[in-house]
Amino acid sequence: MITKLEHNQLEESLQLSEYAFQYTVPREDRERRIQQTKNHTVYGIYEEEKLAAKLHLIPLEIQMGKHVYPMGGIAGVATYPEFRRRGYVRRLMNHSLQKMKEDGQVLSMLHPFYIDFYRKFGWEVFTYFHKAQLEKKDLVPLKPHNGQIKRFTKDTYPNELESIYNRYAEEYNGMLVRSENWWRERSITDLWIAIYYNEQAEATGYLTYEVKKEKIKVEEFVPLTSDARIGLWNFICQHDSMVKEAELILNPCEPLLYMLRDPAVKMEKYPYFMARIVDVENFLKKYLKEIDFSYQLSLSITDPTAAWNTNTFFVNKNEVIVGEKMEDPVSMDINAFTGLVFGIHTPQALLQMGKLQCGQGQGELHKLQAFSQGKQPFFYDFF
Image 1 (cartoon, rainbow, N blue to C red):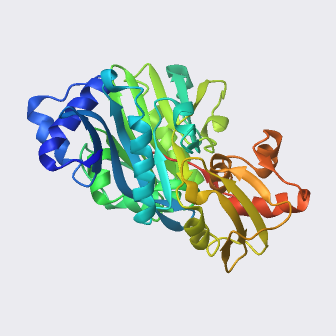
Image 2 (image 1 turned 135 degrees about the horizontal axis):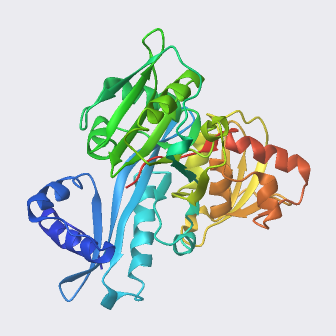
Image 3 (image 1 turned 180 degrees about the vertical axis):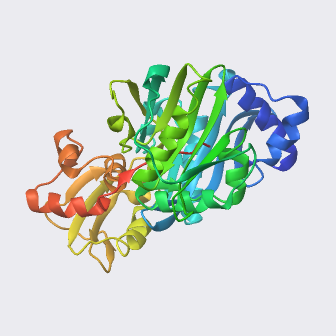
C-alpha cells in the first residue's frame, strides 16, 4: 500500500536518502533539511512498519519559450537493498503519474541515476550540458568592453538576477520557473555572484561561481548580450593570479569557447535531466494555442506506463480530438514525442533512429517540425 508520509515520518525518509545516496546530514541540520521538503509530497511503501521505498513529488513550473507549464518534479526515489526488485519503485512511479495527471501537471522531470531505468517509465533525456576544463594559460581576456562587473557576496539576492534569468529562460525549452525561495535555497547557496552592467547601467548577464583550492568553478554562465559574454569572461580571467585552472558548466548553445584565443580546450558533454509528457491530451490543448502551428495532423502515441496517453490524437490550431481514426497517422512512443516537443531531436533524426513512423512522407515531417518551436532545450537546475 502506498502511503503519503506525514511530517513526523520525514525523518525516516531522510534516513533512507542518506543510506541510498551515501551522505550524512549533521544533527544540527536535519530539521532544516526536512523543512526544505515542506512543499514536497512524499509517497512511501512500508513493509513490517519499516519504510521500504519512497519518492518525492514536487510541484514546479517550467518555461517552454515564453509560456509556463505546470510540472511535477520527481526526486529522492530510493529503496533499501533488502526490499529491492519487488516492484516498489514501479508502483510509486505509476502512482505519481496518476497524481500529476489529477493535479494538472502535464509535464514531469527528474534527474536519473541511470537513464535506461527511467526510459522504461516514459521519461527521456531532454537536455545536456557542457563541462569545459581550462588551464591558467587559457584565461586570456577578450576585447575590452564598456560595461562593468559588480560582485555580490554569498547568500545575497540581487534583484537583477531574476530578470536576467527570466529573459534567458524565454529562449529555451524546459527552464525552471524560479521563485525567490528557490534562488535563496538552491541556486546561490555558498556561491559568489557576478553581474554585468552595460553602459546604460542595465544588468545583462550574470555568473555564479566558487573559488577553492586554486580553481574557479562557474556553475551558471548567463549572458544576454555579446558585451555581457565578453565582460563575464574577462572577469573570470581576472582570477588568473589566484587559480591554476577553471571549470565552466555551459549551455551547449553557448558560443564562448569558440571565441577564445585557443578554442582547443577540454570539453565534455553530459546528458543531464529527463522529461516526459504526463498528459498528452491536456498538454496539446494548451501547447497548440501557444505555438505557430497551422496544420492538421494525426498522431498515434503509445505509452505503456500512462495508459491514458495511448491513443490517436487529431490536432489542429483550435482543437484536439482523441480517438479519431485516420489512415497512416504519425506514430511514436511517449519518449520520442517528448524529445520532439522539447526540441532535443528533429523529426528527421527520430525517423533515422526508427523512433518515428511516418507513412505520408515529407509533408508530415514538415508539420512535426513546427512542434518544437525551433527552440533548444536547456536546464540549469537540480532537484
